[in-house]
Amino acid sequence: MKRTLIIFGIIILAGIAWYGIAPIFMKTVVDEPLPMSTDTPTAPPLPEVTELRPPAAVTGTPGHPASGTARIVVDGGQEYLRYENFKTINGPDLRVYLATDTDAKDFIDLGPLRGTEGNINYPIPAGTDTAKYHYALTWCEDFAVLFNAADISRSR
Image (cartoon, rainbow, N blue to C red):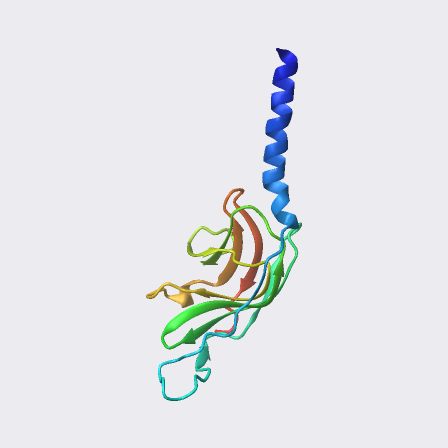
């Protein structure tokens, strides 16, 4: 009986370890263009993106290296958080937030991290006061851990 419990415990621990460690080795590359306005169907679409803030450097935390830039852009009234030349490691249940601080106490969830490398656009919900949110975060929901952040408030 004791041997069965030990084997069962090892299997459970191996499963938990795999869940926490396996995503680190998975890489997803996304290369989305800047959002482009297509309001005039008679003319070829031209970029009409307004940059609200200049790019901010993305910095990782200990054990979670990251690089690239983050910025807020507007296309036809729709605001986006845009990561450019972004690179980070993967993890379980990573989310992208606009937050008032790096502790993710007050934030807007922009959805799951769609790529660990590349240029990625995250639509910001209509009516969001982006001036309130100073940081773009990659946050691990499962472990409540910050993976990386960009201080997007510096341009004001």
